[in-house]
Length: 578
Image 1 (cartoon, rainbow, N blue to C red):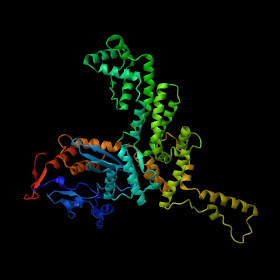
Image 2 (cartoon, rainbow, N blue to C red):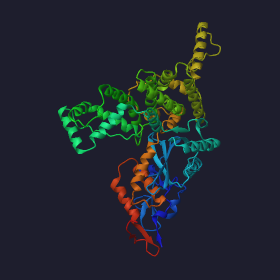
Image 3 (cartoon, rainbow, N blue to C red):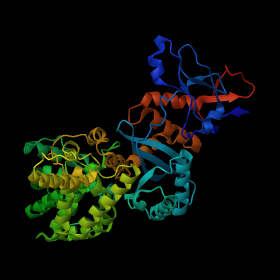
C-alpha cells in the first residue's frame, strides 16, 4: 500500500506553532534564555508531522512522519496579523475536466499598514452552484479560519446566484452582530463587471461606421497579399508601422475600442488603400471617420477607468470614486448632447449605470472622504453635479458616514474630545481674590463657552475641518493614517477596514489564471486537495512575485513522491508523473 501525498489535508487553518520570540534572539550573546510562546496547533496537517527539539541553529523544525525529511516550523510564512477587519472576493471557475472550484481571497491591512491579499481557499465545488450552497460553503471557510467575526465586506460579480448567496450570508452575520452598520456596506458589486455591462448596453446598436471599420480590418487580415499591400501604403504615407492593427471580438467591448484606436491611427493608410486596391470597398467616408473619432473618445473614458481594475495587487479603494463618478457624469453630459448616435448610446448606458450605481456608490464615497486630498469636498461636489443642490444622495451619504463613525467611536472608546480647558487650567480665579477686574470676568466666561463648543466636536469633524491637501499632491494614504492613528483612533480603524475593500473581483480571476496553469491537459486528474495545496502554497510563499522554475521543481517533487508501507523512512521511491 502506498501513501499518497495527495491524501494529506492541505488546507491550513490558522496554523499555529511553537514560536521563538525575536527579542530573545537579539540578546542571545548575553546568555539570555530563549523565550518561547506555546500556541495551539489547529491545522489538520500537523497530524502528519512530529516536532523536533531545538538544534544548534536554534530553529524550530518538524519531521514528516512518512519520511525522514525535516522542515522549518517557525512563523516566517504564518498568516499576517490583521490590523482591522477583513474583506473578501469570491469567484467560481471550472477546470478542463469540468470540475467546479470556488476561490476565497482575503484583503486586509496588516499591522504595518500594508495592503495584503491572500488566497485562503481554492476548493472543489460540486454541483449545484446555487446561492444557498455557496453561502454555506463560504461560511464554512470563514468558520474554519476562525474569522467569521472579522468580516467587513465581500465583493462579487453580477451572477444571479450571488444575489441569493450574499443575502443569506449577510443575514447570518447580522444575526451574530458582527457586521458594521448592520451590513449596509457588506455587499460590494464588482465595478469592472458593471462597467463592462454598461458599455455593452451602449454598443448593442452598432453604427454603420463601426461595421465598416471592422470589415476593413478583416479585409486587410484576410490574406498575406492584402497585408503586404497595406504595408506598402504605410510606407507611402510615411507613418510608422509599429502600432498593430487590432481585430475586435464583438462580445468584448475593450477589443472594439482598441480596434477603433488602431484604425484611426492608420486612417490615411486606409484612404490610400481604397485608391490603390479596387477590391477594397469598405473604407469609411470622411464624415464616418469623424464619427468613429467621437465614438473612440467616448469609449476611452470607460477603457481608462477599466484599466484601473486590472491590477493583481491594486491600490486602495479611495482611488476609484473619481474615475467612476467621471464616467457617470460624462454619461449624463452625452445623454443631453447634440450627437444623436452618442446620445442614444449614453441614454441606454445611463439607465444601466443607474441600476448599479445606487448599490455601491456609498462605499466608494466614504473611502473618498477618508482621502485627505478630497474629504467631503469632492463627494459633495460630485453629487451636486449629478443631482443638484441639497440632493437626497448627499444627505444620505453624510448621515451614513457619521453613523458609521459613531459605531467605530464607540468600539474604540474614543468619544468626543475631552481635552482639559487650557483657560480654565491656567486662569482659575483664586477664592477671595480682589485683584481681578470685573471686566475680565466677562472675557473669561466667553473663552470658556468657546472652548466648550470646540471640545464638543467629534474627531471626524476635526479631521474634516482641517485643510485638504492639494489634489495632485503625492501621498501614501496608508502611511497617512498610520501616522495619525493615535490622533484619530476611531477614524484610523474605520480607514483600515474601508480602504481594504476590493472594488473588483479581478484579483480572484487572476488566481484562476494560475489555476489554469496548474490544471493543464496533463494534470487535469489531480485531486482537488492537491490543486488547492498548489494554488494556496504558491500564493502564501511567493505572493505576486515571479516563481516559475522554483515552483515547477516543487510541483514535480510532489508528483514524483510515493512511499510504500514496508519501506524505511530514508528510502523514497521516485515514480513517474501520473
